[in-house]
Image 1: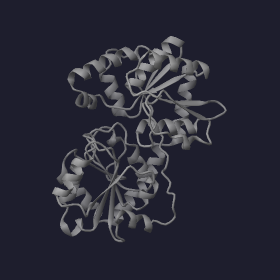
Image 2: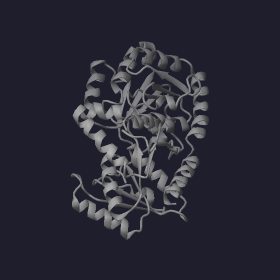
Image 3: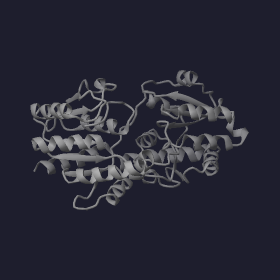
Image 4: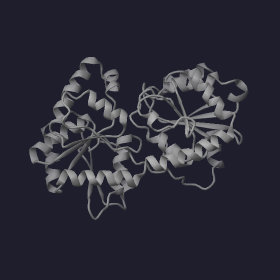
Length: 369
């Protein structure tokens, strides 16, 4: 169960990947979304996965609970697997009413909730979460930092979070030639291309990245292009900053894109300056595309990068240090190549889809015994 169907969010994409890769002879998957949203039906046409939307953008009420109880009972669903607090609340209520086990998958970091919601809302959220934990069968976390965050905020530790890192699929390109794509987005033949995929909000660190680009010496800055992929409430604010720093030739806003595999092919380096990150799927996808990565030493990002082997870690919100590391890579193509080759090997080993599916399958079987 997820909040909405979308090809851009981490939780929906992980659920999609999981559902499509579970053994169809053993499992039938139903993906339920709370809100009316963009359908991902095309991704599931040839799979054993069913989609269902509760179609509400309102608070959980008795009608939503009744609909989900009916849906779970009618389809003989054995496990309710929820992603997110609102979904956890609904899953726990329905699971209690019709006696079905609930697995809660944690994607967030508690400190982020404190900043986003304020102290009072955060404390209420913490109390609700501790009550929900009493009724879930298992708590699963996608990184060490989310597991540690969950542990610190539980009043009791009878249910220890289980660490299961995402398996990440490679974003394969859809075209064989990329010159047309370069021309489309405004990249010259000899440009050094950096990329970043992320929703424009306070967590993502776009401002720090833009300021770092402004600190790169003009002789190198004129040879680079930074592709910012995504949308969000802070996008126009970042656009204004780019204009104020006179970087409109260097920084390109692409909005949400579905051709990520193709865009990776025209990049030389991937950057993630986020100041709060519970996992970093796009960063792993970039690594699978043989791109070196430069990431902030924040949240779960240090779990992805081995310093000097597949990329570099930088202090969060330090534009000067970020600019220096970017310069180091821009001026050294051989270093970029070596880091990129290592990035692919490391990501294939640490974030294998096969290993992820195996662990989740074992979890399902354990919960049902």
